[in-house]
Length: 183
Image 1 (cartoon, rainbow, N blue to C red):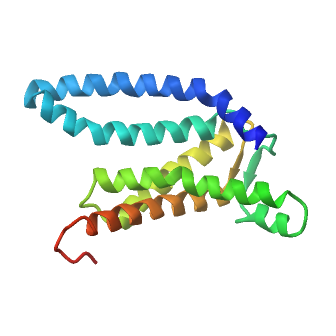
Image 2: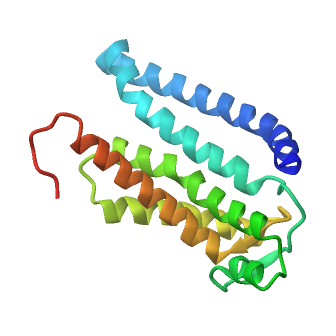
């Protein structure tokens, strides 16, 4: 776990930089919206956008920056290869499981925020949008010199995480005192 903590400390400046960019963009957006609707409405309308931008910004910083540990560069098109290798003793099972779980968890907030920002949108559409974000990340890892492996398993895990977040958001909304039946 020391490697992951060291890596997280190393990416903090990137996260802080991304937060400043998002804050500046949101302040501009609030100012633009306030001219038409007033400050209170502008702030309420911008908060979901700001949170969604923050989720995407975190994904960009955490997935396109330097990796936590050395990994092969290139493209892996074999789904769940690391899990198979862990079962065969070729890679550390804890690292393979942690990496898979991290890829799922990284996209849960994106799913929650997409569903909150676009409550009338289909779950399939929102999941497809999250899959496109993940595909863009993996494509970036494939063509940029990030020292990372573009991996189909990550695409599947990221999309599953977003779908989980979307489902959680819908479950929370359905249980939030509404008398409607949601299907």
